[in-house]
Image (tube, rainbow, N blue to C red; front, side, top):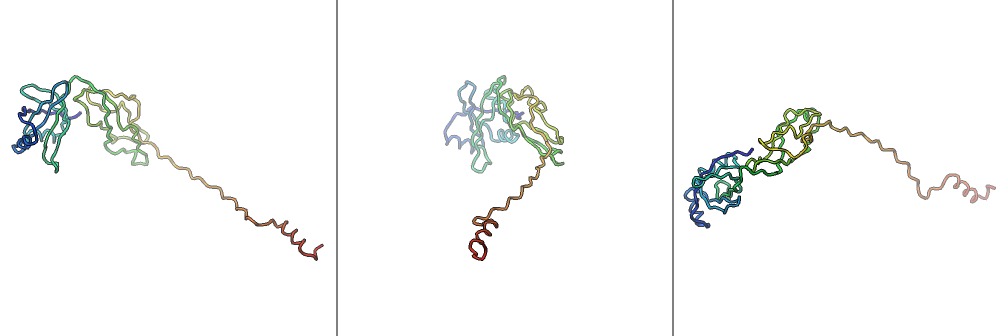
Length: 218
């Protein structure tokens, strides 16, 4: 599941490019909170408070404004040209009780022992649809293949999903397996028949015609 953290923001009194530049010069980052049937709210937070949360990999935050706490998803972060300082951020409010259907990538982790002894690793299922709480959407679901032997498979039922989540695929559907390498049979091509020479006369016909030309042969 995505990491969670808390951000305490303040209302932003001014808007516009010039006002946002002044905030950044003071070490503060302008942002917006929107969504969930509520009007967008312009906010601001200190860069030294926002940066550690983002560096931790948090995608879901409890955002506090004037004592009220909302669950929100980090929707967009705008960086400067060199990718070193944050210029702006957007947070999307979500209902902690709302469930969503979402397609999540399946990420293989490790090396399958079966592939090291001549087997072929086949990644059959690359994504999976799950239903989960809106604030628990995972970035990916890891599939650990470090113990996957030759002839064995990992099925949907073996996946570790976020708590309370359910997969929409059949439990016995194969996610990844290691199969025996197929041996290609050598096909021996038949030798081609000798081509007939155009204009070449059969020996018998040639001998008959030669007899007609020779007056001594009667």
